[in-house]
Length: 128
Image (cartoon, rainbow, N blue to C red):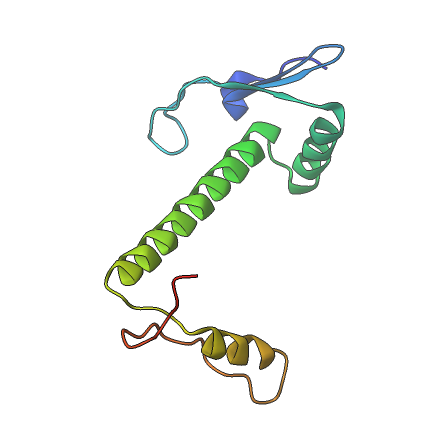
């Protein structure tokens, strides 16, 4: 596969016998921000899936890779924030009882689904 035109896509895809490289080049054109070159190695199955999806969406594979990486990092940041919030509540002695959590989970997919339980400071918990 020949490299893609840098002028139109801002990226190059270079194929080698066993590895696939996606190189994202510096540009200011589309979003008026500066990006840095970065290369990653993809196995054959992943590179074929990425190429197929890029073709379906009529976008460069590098653009899909950037979106996927950004989405994953945002999800991880949100998860860390939720964990930090829960740890802060726990440090203040606020917990959700096992009974409340089990009742909520048991109500899933029922006509009377309960709202998520709220942490309370008056929960008794054993140090087992």
